[in-house]
Length: 110
Image (tube, rainbow, N blue to C red):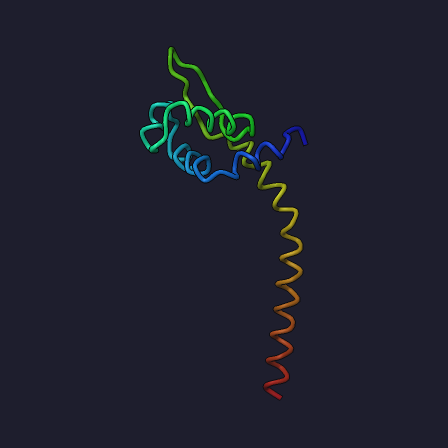
């Protein structure tokens, strides 16, 4: 895996950063746009954005004097792919539960 997933999980660990991602999922935003959404200083938002960028969850493009922040779907896909590995364990548990329920219903109806 080319992305160090630890940086992504670190970025997701903070509720403010997760909320920033929600805002960026709706539209690209400047630092000023994001700062307006929170009761945090511009410097604080900038630190959060740097962590999100190092986790490859956002990308930043410079347009004139502005830095435009965008949600980076490839970074999110890496996390989703990593988590999807564990779906197999849930699938097995749910399948076992379904079988147990069906067996219980059969015994009850007899």
